[in-house]
Image 1 (tube, rainbow, N blue to C red):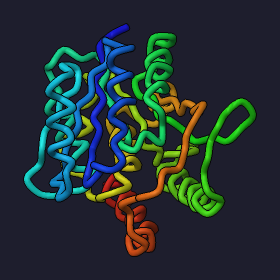
Image 2: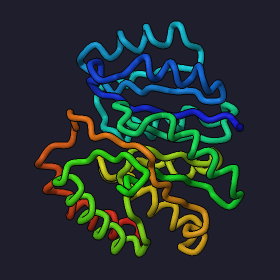
Image 3: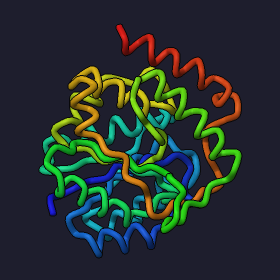
Length: 243
C-alpha cells in the first residue's frame, strides 16, 4: 500500500479527540500518517496534541495562530504535505464520526481502479451498514444534496461527509487558492475539479464510497445562523465557478 497522510482539522477538540483510537490506527497501519491542524484553539487542544505527537512519529501537528475555519485549516494542512513523499492525501473529521478504519477501504478503491483520483465517503443508510444519523440532519442533508447536484450538474449523494482522500498530485491545484466559503468548501472542491478536468472525466475519476459505519457526534461547530446562509453560499459557489 502506498503512503497516505490524513489531515485532521481541530478547533477546541480537547474533550473529543479519541487519542487511543488514533494511536491504535497508526500502529496497525504504518503506511498511514496523521497531521492534526490546531485551528487557533482556546482550550487544551495544543497541550493534548503536543503529548500525543511526542511519542508517535507517524502523528504530527501544526498550529494556526488564530481560528481560520475548517476550510482554511484543511487547505493549509494539505499544502504543507506536498512533496513529502505521500501518494495519497486526505482529510478527516476529528470526532471520528467516520472511523479511521474506513480509510483503508478508501485506498483499496484507488488500488482497484487506476482511473480513480478522488474518493469521498457517503453516509448512505442501508442494510449491512451502521449509519447513526438524526432524522433532522438526514432530511437537511437530502435537501442540501439536491441543491448541490443541481448547482454542479453532478449526481452527488453526500458532498459534506468529512472523509475524503485524493491522489497527492491533485492537491496543489485543488487547494492552492483560498475557498470562498467557510464550511461547504467540499462543494467548491468538486466545482474546482470539474473546471480542471471536465464533467466527463470527473464522473469517471471520483467515487462516492458508501461507509460501513458513521456515527453522529454532538458538538458541531456550525451555527444555526450559518445554516440559514447555506442556500446563498451555494449560489455564490455556482456564480463564482461558472465564470
